[in-house]
Image 1 (cartoon, helix red, strand yellow):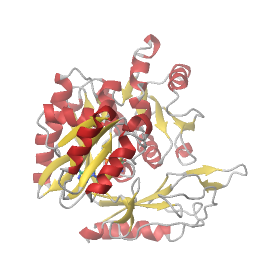
Image 2 (tube, helix red, strand yellow; image 1 turned 90 degrees about the vertical axis):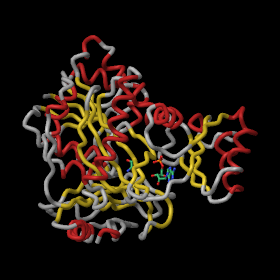
Image 3 (cartoon, helix red, strand yellow; image 1 turned 180 degrees about the horizontal axis):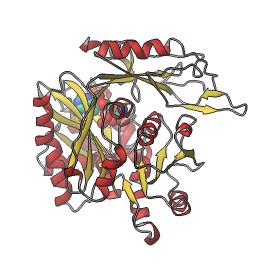
Image 4 (cartoon, helix red, strand yellow; image 1 turned 120 degrees about the vertical axis):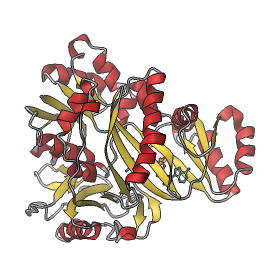
Length: 426
Ligand code: AMP
Ligand code: GLY
């Protein structure tokens, strides 16, 4: 099969590696990709969200399957655009259409969806600017902490947990009246705070059925011991000790099955990855959010752990026969540790030369998250999250130690990574 993968981060490097293992692959293209994905296919200088250029590339390169990494092209309707073009209708798109992508693109939509289908989640109310007084009163009378969420996509920054009513009112004003996140905060979801441990669960949906393809725990805070600001993710482990068969059964029965059924009932033909962000509250799963894509850095552990041929699974999405597949996992523990630029998630400098990438690490994966080649062909930093190092081991500690020993040999000015990934399971 001729495959086009969209995106340019660590998630896409991990997907490109996994796709490259498939016996069904003939050619892989990545738009735009990074120097890591270039080892497994041909990078195209097309932005992942440039829908007309992606459609043209699909035609020119006779693509059979498009796998969409990030949410942005999905929320903008890349799947709809490909499917509405007569010459491209044979293409299998892994990623939902615009209506399915609302599960991530609108928090108000996803909360109302969960309510309609009896899926456990925190109680909430939504408000627009013209409801300011009502919203203010609601927030001031809400128990603390209270969670405020911009309705639309806000580059992972649209969720604010407020510990005081004053802070909640100020945050509400900034979002709703001062349009802190532009159109994304034209509507705000006000939600109860859930206490527990988070887990990311991943399923592949074919419009009728699904398979769970893995889970992971993401370490979101910048500092060791889960302190400091939220980031895109500083590391992950999989499998997760508390996600035992009993807990995962609850997740399937109470969350994934009603989600798949709800999508069908609402006429949404959802074909692609579904990422369910959950809180484990005393052994009971509650949905924090849906994403219409794989997680980053979760993909960097979920893909190495998954034993199945990914393209074979994706072909079953195209024929709506995912139910016929059996998912299997490698028995080891997997961990990824993310090296980031100094200053991240605040301001940071780019274009720092990276030393050590030329060394050979045969038992680990070095997935490029924010790495580009400069004009002299040297590998330099190009983002906040720079490099995800994934290892496996007979325990979480062993896997994390392996990744740390690699990072010990990688160097760029300002490099930072957490040394305590998986700390609560050691
Ligand atoms: P989201 O962008 O929806 O993933 O939210 C970002 C992070 O905020 C989540 O990963 C949680 O750590 C936290 N969060 C969101 N909603 C809640 C909630 N209702 N209770 C507690 N924490 C939350
Ligand atoms: N690691 C969280 C995300 O991909 O949204």
